[in-house]
Length: 135
Image 1 (spheres, rainbow, N blue to C red):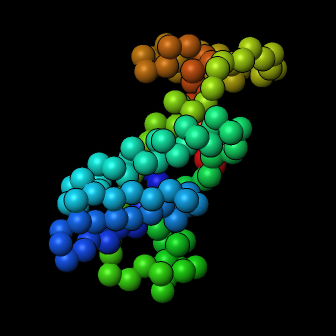
Image 2 (image 1 turned 90 degrees about the horizontal axis):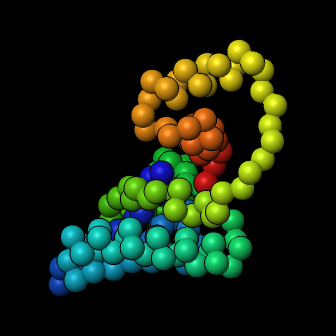
């Protein structure tokens, strides 16, 4: 999932930024490149802390939404989209019992057989849910 980050460069070459969707998550570096690298580390650490506290992870919204709501806050910098693997924050697996129509179940099983990135039906259903649900 991509989280938008807003970053400013300073005259000395350093840079810092924040994630508008993630309250309290900031990053910085002695160069623009270092700040880009720190952005992903900062977001991962922030999400790990939220998970440890049992908090819900915030959803990521498009840059356009931020510009529409708070355009005056985003002047003189640039946007960065930080890709983060949300699977690492899902927690331990839990067995459930669900009911699906037989035809749909057959379609899922055929799809899983033809797509090796899904190890099984559960992996497919989890990924489908991640794509549909926010955050």
